[in-house]
Length: 226
Image (cartoon, rainbow, N blue to C red; front, side, top):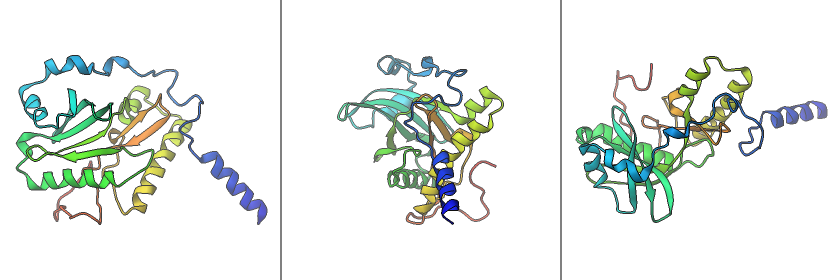
């Protein structure tokens, strides 16, 4: 029995992910981070379109030097400098054309509240929520590459790479499930690899199921990515 316990502990120790360790990690040699994709915050504001400028104008004054990071079907993610806490942040906002849709607004608010209640190294952190006209929430700013992009570039992942990131995902979702939160849209595009490929972060809890929040799922409607 003692032998089995020792073997089990040894196996657990081998499988434990240490994100701060200074070892060479998957992809580190052949896929260095492309720093050219990181926008210069001080100059990008001149390239914002009219809609983006209108949305940004409603943000609290503590967020300055705002630039656009990405745009999806439901919202826009901006980068900004939080002058109060003196750090770079990311801000997610709903597109103006969807602000009258109560279902989308509710999911957006639920996402912010659900993630804000989570504290795990492999889950995106939420710092602030607000916005009467255009709802927004403020997240930690991450520089990295999505797991989807990483797989596309690599074409074929080794068993070590699958294990390295897979264990981090599993640990994140185990933590979520322990809190009663189900992500419901698990896919490579909703993961980002940061810190020189050492750390995986789970993103986009927009359709997560949280028993502590009001449900907005409709009958006979499929959510997530088929």
